[in-house]
Every structure is written in C-alpha cells, then in structure tokens.
Image (cartoon, rainbow, N blue to C red; front, top):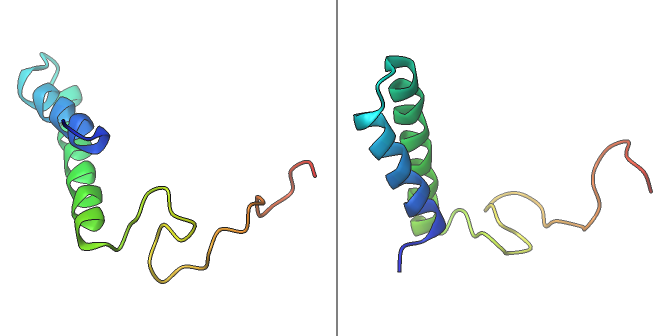
Length: 71
C-alpha cells in the first residue's frame, strides 16, 4: 500500500512530466521536491505525523491555537 505522501509525490511527478503547460510542470516539480523532502524527514524520524511532538526539537502541541482566535 502506498502512503499519502508517496501518492502525492507520484501525482506531482506525473504532472511534471505530462502536463501540457510549462508553468504547471514547473509547479509540479516543486511540489514533488517538497514531498520528497517531507518523506525523507519522516524516514529519519525528525517528523512524526500524528504525534503530540510531530517535529523533533519543537515543543509538544498543547491543544490550543497560539493567537487571537475564539476561546
């Protein structure tokens, strides 16, 4: 089974090679690069999606938004 990040990267790569518009191909290449970086971070353990501390070296999520919203 392919993971969500792998699927998004593959879709971006497909668009980067097949879309008729040059600007769309360029944006897709940039997205594919970003997804590749995200996948690499997950494989190293620096990024752990779903964790209370999803990014190493950053504080734990406290459950509230930091900023002026309701509540």
